[in-house]
Amino acid sequence: MAIEVGMILEGKVTRIEKFGAFVQLEDSQTGMVHISEVAPTFINEISDYVQVGQEVKVKVLAINNGRISLSMKQALPKEQQRRPRPQKPARERTPRQPYQPAPPVTSPGDYEWQSSRRSAPTTFEDMMSRFKQTSEDKMSDLKRGGESRGYSRRGNGSGRK
Image 1 (cartoon, helix red, strand yellow):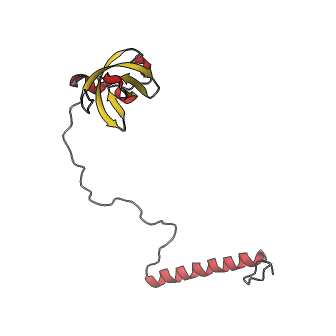
Image 2 (spheres, helix red, strand yellow; image 1 turned 120 degrees about the vertical axis):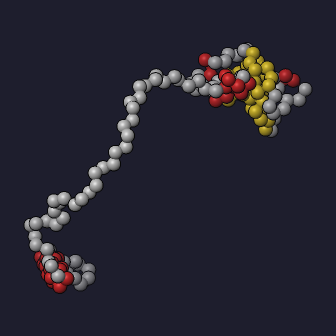
Image 3 (tube, helix red, strand yellow; image 1 turned 90 degrees about the vertical axis):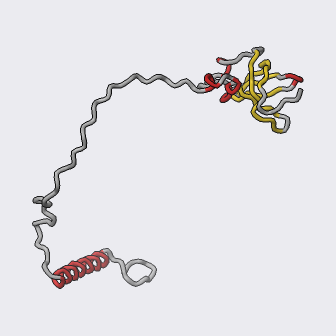
């Protein structure tokens, strides 16, 4: 009898590795059950679930280049294939309060949008003259700082005057 995908067979475990178990099927063919296909729960040690010489029921998942992939958990009845979920303790629910919108905003409040320590210019021309003055001050500070360190603006190679 030829082995086909989807068949459920019985076999004997012949070898156990960290990654799975090898099962001897009919006609002296061997298939492998990957560790993830042994049980519906997480398995740390496969030897906790199967032993060498144990008779197991398996389902044929795939046949590739003579290699037979098997599953023990898919050979189980449907209700046993699912991972058992831990039961959560029932928690008490507090009744929900009806939605109450926030009161409407009537004014922005007494928030001070600009700092009171400096007086803001009132016209565009005042703002431009203040910007120009601070820019000139910063440029003169940069020029003074560069000259005091002895750096030249010309690239004479030495970096000194």
